[in-house]
Image 1 (cartoon, rainbow, N blue to C red):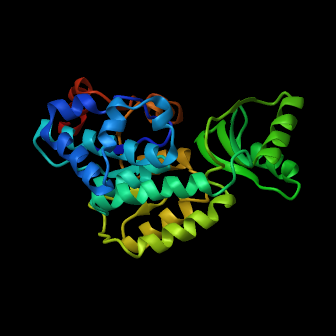
Image 2 (cartoon, rainbow, N blue to C red):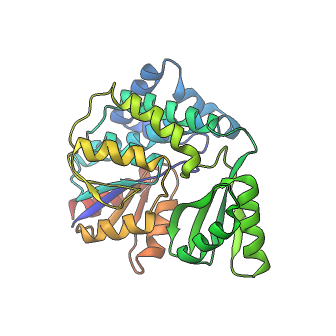
Length: 313
C-alpha cells in the first residue's frame, strides 16, 4: 500500500514526549544522544523533565519537536526491521525540516542546530507584542485574504496557514490582526481564536529571518532526498537540493499551504498517511481535507502496530 509520512510543527510539544520511544528503542535513544551532543546541552532533559513553559520557548520547541519526531521515525524502522519507503513526505512548518532529516537531505546534527537558530531568529524578528497570529474558522481563504487587505492600513496582515478549506491562520502586526478580527466579528462571518505564539510567523515580517537562514544554508552539507518532500510554500514535489533550499527559504515568510500539500500527496499516489511525532493534529486535518481517509498517528510505541500494517501493506 502506498503511503506518505508527515511530521508535526510547533504547538505539538508536551513535557515527556518521546521518552517511551527512547526507553524501548535503541535507535530512538541514539537520536536523543545525537541531538544533545550537537546542541551542546541536554535537550533530552528539557524534553523529558522540563515544564510546558520551558518547552514553549521557540528556540527549544523547534529542535525538541524535530528530535522527538525523528526518534519516532527511527523507532518505527527498528520495530518493523526495514527502511521506510513512502511515496513522499511532508511536514507542517517546522515539520518540513524534520522531513529533510528523515529523507536524508540534512544530518540530524546539522538540522537541530539549524532549527534552534530558526526558532531564535523567529522569536527575535519582531519586538514582543508587535506581532501576533489568529485562527479564523468557518471562512474560505479568498474571503479571509480580502478582509486582511481591507484591514492592513499600511501594516502587515496576511494568511499564514491554510490548515483546512475553512480554517485559516492569519499573521502580522498586532493592530492589523485586531482590525481584521473586528471586521470578521462585526459581520458575523466566522469564529476567531487567538494563538499563543511568540511572533507573527509565515508572513513578510519574517523576511529578515529567511535571509539569515539562507546564509546559514551555505555552511551545511545537503543531499538529494531519498523520496520527494512536498513544499509548504508551493505545494510542489521537491526532488533536488536547489529546489529544497529555495523552498525552505520561501517557507519562512510564506503561508503553509497544508490543504494543497495534502492534495499534492494524494496526487503523488499516497493512499494512506502516517503522522510521526508528538500529537495527532495533522491526522485530524488530513481527515477533514480527505473525507473518508483515516490517517494513523504514531505518538506512542503502541501506535506502531497500526503504522506497520500500512507500511507492510
